[in-house]
Length: 441
Ligand code: FES
Ligand SMILES: [Fe+2]
Image (tube, rainbow, N blue to C red; front, side, top):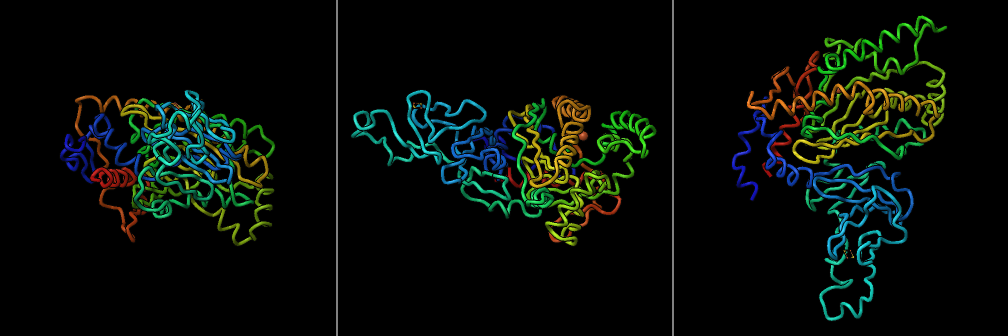
């Protein structure tokens, strides 16, 4: 067994440092898939990706090719994308509509949307007297052990036991509440395509970067400075002396300097989840925002409206597979492909009932900050690749997470960073703590 080959995992993780093999050893990677990604709740997709009966969307969960499908009864099922006959992949396309049932392209076995065997060509003459038929569950497409939906966001766990989705998410549920509550209709709808980026680095390097509040004003400084120069020029020429908000989305990387990032805070929860406070989108007073505010106040009343738009979140990390920026309605799903290859899917959403201009604003952030075309993303990707290269060398054995160590404040099981410690490496320490707990089994 793999575990016997890695007898003492504890020696790999200390509270403030981790051995480099954790990022580079293929056997550790295999065990991670088994013990983490194929056990815990992993985000499959949003229910609006499969609006009609028979709609399906394929998704990688750990090492398993899965598909999320809408049944005729409206229920969403998650199935292994594999035919039980001879193993053929059921759906070769990334997404589509299966019609009234799935039909395997090899020998035409057909299956209901929930995976149950529907028919086999000449089933009676071909299989009478054998153990194969509708009564044998091995003749149906295998279903994910558990599927749950929180406010339209569908998660699956490939293990039949474990905490419920609500227990697993805990306080990180705020990511979805914050996103949906900002919609006048209380729900969001996915923009039905995403950016896909394959990073040549271990999946944990990406997650550790998400709440690394020290890096933006270093890594993205050049991008921020260039944007700030243009922003100043445009503002000088503008009638009201202001550049459009989208310039601010990039210039903030230069204007929010390292010392200012320390004023933010991270809240570190069980299971490796973490929230970074502070919202760089601000609450502008332009006509588009005022029109949106008016719709929201009509819907929710002044007091509830203030509560909703007052939620102060920059980022929510749901370990081990999701990074959500709720005030801007976007998320990144992390799909490990190998020890040194990671797919990220970058999705964004529309607030149902909000004016088009508000959608355009989130689209601007999506394109300017999170897309593969932006320098911001390119700067991060270069770091990820270089980190993986460094960790693959004999230049050192450890990755360290010592920044602001010992200054975190524990409150009811939540590790909060102390005042002016926003750049703490507490989120990385918290992720590795969860990693070690999962890996111990
Ligand atoms: S492999 Fe699917 S029907 Fe034969
Ligand atoms: Fe970054």
